Image 1 (tube, rainbow, N blue to C red):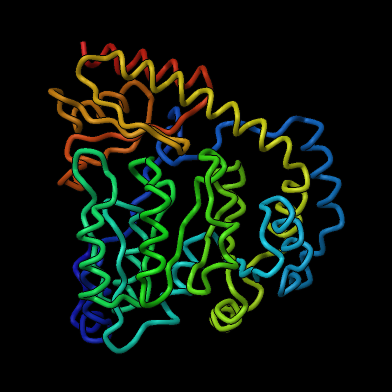
Image 2: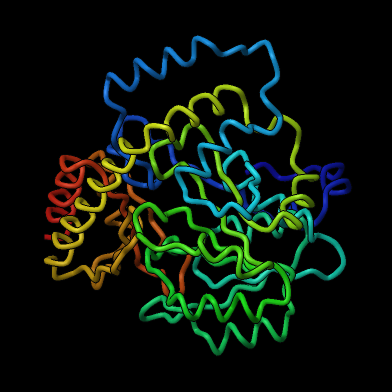
Amino acid sequence: MTEPSLTVKSLLRPEVLALAPYQVADSAGYIKLDAMENPYRWPPSMVDDWLEHLRGCEPNRYPDPSAEGLKAVIRQSNAIPDAAELLLGNGSDELIQIILMAVAGGDATVVAPEPTFVMYRHIARTLGLRFEGVPLRSDTFELDMEAMRDALLRFCPAVVFLAYPNNPTGNLFASEEILEIVNLAPGLAVIDEAYAPFADASFMPMLADYEQLLVMRTVSKLGLAGLRLGFLAGAGAWIEQLDKLRLPYNINVLTQISAEFALSQYHVLEEQTCRICEGRARLFDALNELDDVFVYPSRANFILFKLRRADADAVHNALKEQGILIKNLNSAGGALANCLRVTVGTPAENESFVEAIKRILS
């Protein structure tokens, strides 16, 4: 990484200079099992229908600034309560940024249990916010409620993020514990349901019961990662204010047309989700048979596992040499030391991964 010049150092905020860039591995030529993507493509007939829809696209014009047609399809496909309002973002990342921009300033603090989605901490720090991570229980990755209660009381956070299921651990926190946090939170409680399609669990129906509750989702894990679309549901009083920070035309015309079309064909995405869940169960069983592997239960489209004796860095590199890319979490340390995370792929991809790791560990 290039050393910043004196001019750069004098102009930029210290928290920006201290940040490490978010790294995305080059995946060209690999069996790609590192980014929690849906491995299945659309049926040819669905692709043909999509292309027909794109014929009506007018890229010379700005998109619908409020994306009302897309919002209507999102409401229907995600069973969003009528009383809730919607805010769309260029992926969940933009929505996290908008939420934190709204509370930035003064001594605002953000709290989340960790390990969790790294962008909560990363974006908070880019905005100069104080971020306090509350360690999960190291053996099960469940919430440490005593520590969470203490953090809510001590830091009085403006925002609490709870990933449900959690990334990178894959587990669902106990629903009664999440509701306790929502009730105790002095500010916003944001439940990130990026992996809801694989979990059969959601707090979306409870939005009307808790004014300070926001539920965030993305279409990325459903098979639309390339469209970069996330949405936030919650009380109109919050959404109206957060919408002031949304940049105009943030959801481009190709995303609006494509996502509206894809979500109207939700049965195809649901069928692919079922296949991924079936593959997850088989992959879990296969990994669980390996003596050197401890596998954590998952309700997402990935599986976290810890190596008991082998070195995670060495195994990760050996898998890359065999053309398979998964996520190495060893550098995070703590409870994630010697842990790897694999996305559930197609049956053939899962089999290739299992055979490769068997060879490496033997």
